[in-house]
Image 1 (cartoon, helix red, strand yellow):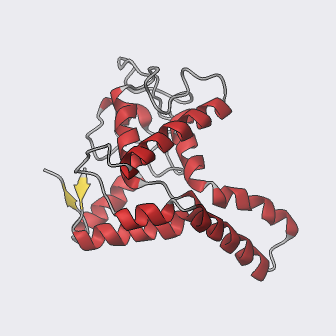
Image 2: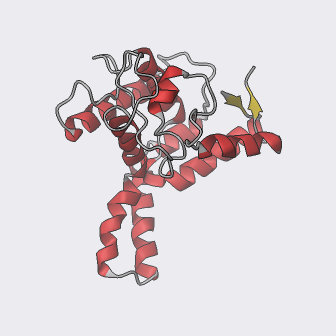
Amino acid sequence: MYRLNRFWERAFYLLTFLFQGSSFLHPAAYAVMHRRHHAYADTYKDPHSPVHVSNIFEFNKKTFDEYRVIVKQFAEDKIKANDVPRWIFMERLAELHSVRVLFVLIYILIYYYLSAPAWSYFLIPLHVLMGPIHGFIVNWFGHSVGYRNYKEIKDKSTNSLPIDFLMMGELYQNNHHKFPNKRNFALKWFELDMGYILASFFQKINVIDRRR
């Protein structure tokens, strides 16, 4: 939907890696998986749909397996996708187990040096798995819980929250599946897409451009 020049693409790529840390998701692989989700929404070919699985563990395993296959295909140069962000060095670096473990140790050390109470250490798994947790919330609840503005579309997508304060607009999945190329996921007067507002701000200050 948007494009960045080489400097800003690399800057956002690096910041995403640093902030996602141990749960960094290969951007190109995630883009391809998301496109397949739209192409096969809520069918057996959908890489992350709650419709044809029996529980959240099966859902997350299927999503993980599909994602790993695509990452491997990119590493072996078996996927040709010229319009997704690529940075080969960072892709390889982020996939190293030692790098992910290093991030986990950094999280633990931050808690330790801040003299955090013992109970707060139970929050560390949330930091470690933040990326998959985000994906689970959007794709599980966004296809199983909420209301539907567009009941005529064949998939099971829903808008999980009337005001999406949690995922910055990504929980308007029914709206998004009805109009997958629309930048603003919020379509009713009470809905609010913070992601679109932020993207519009970046566009105004010439950090990103709209794709034509």
